[in-house]
Image (cartoon, rainbow, N blue to C red; front, side, top):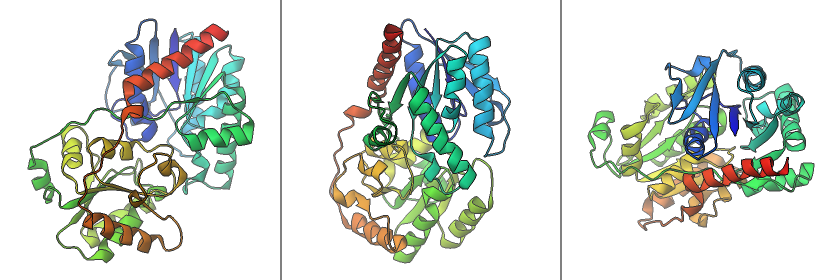
Length: 366
């Protein structure tokens, strides 16, 4: 079965939740008998010349680096290539923006699986026109895809209510086994001590609310702790520049994008992981922190609450958010209990098996 993946910037070393999802999932699909997988990448995001990654073929197509056009133009080109270059059996489209072109893929005679990663129209960066198109993309994906995958119950409830799509496969994001790094040399390099820093990671976009985290932490006046934020903007903009200036003034440590052992070391030795987002699908970064057994604190938005963590693991995203987060940070730092999480549902091998079953179901039905 030939699977072509569209809607992602690419794999393996490209920042983003969808990109992390695809990096973990598709090598496991490709390793299964009877599956041939190609991921179509956006050329401007790639810094390598890889033709394949862990059994997944990679194919780069030029893209337009304009946030309003990038995803849709690239997805159009990817679907065209899926039909005429790869003769795909299934096009697997990720995210609601690219899903706008689901009917196009169907018209070309291919089956479509659409993974709904979350309501991107709620992101702060989009204007009115873009939000309209994203909502339309969600509609096109849910109405015309042969198979729909949702990563959380809140998303499943949404598409049942809005589109009467009742046959979606609930397959969550996953997390790999933690890699424990005892060596603290990288921590010394960035000037922090084990268990003496609060950690956050993600793209520098407004909905991640790292500016709120910086302000909340600064207001606590806890000199024994530091705030470390890993990540960066895809493209430098006014928000990311302001965030970096705010971090510099407050003494927060910005590491840039870190991977491999450096990221594992930060996750191994953090005192607390914080996710203050206003928008998520099912946050992989939070799952990663949980896999390391870290105490976590997340906003009480539906996507985060879908993980069913104990109440002290959430702060109220409403009212005075800075004060709410600061109060919860202080409480979590006073709490010395050791958390225990059930990570069984988020095993990538299990998720790959569920996704492969969704593909085979389409083959049997059609």
